[in-house]
Image 1 (tube, rainbow, N blue to C red):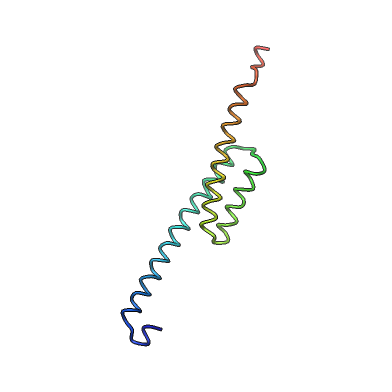
Image 2 (cartoon, rainbow, N blue to C red; image 1 turned 45 degrees about the horizontal axis):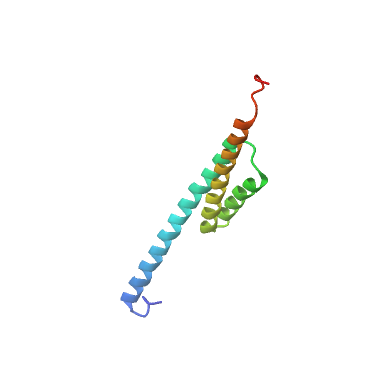
Length: 103
């Protein structure tokens, strides 16, 4: 519209803003994709996880599919944190269990 009205400076400013917005969205998409894939990979490596952790990972994938990249990134980070907590708990339980060879 600015271009047609021969308001070239405003047209250039609007084009630059659009380009910056596209770059920002592209960066959000790339970060979210990496975070979601990382959460899914860590969940697979863990094997069996709690329903809450599985739901967080699924929620992060859905948010990514729905193009809600900020939510996808946030949820994937929370999922990875939960997976790390679960690993610590599994290790503590494993260390506290008596060795069957010693019983």
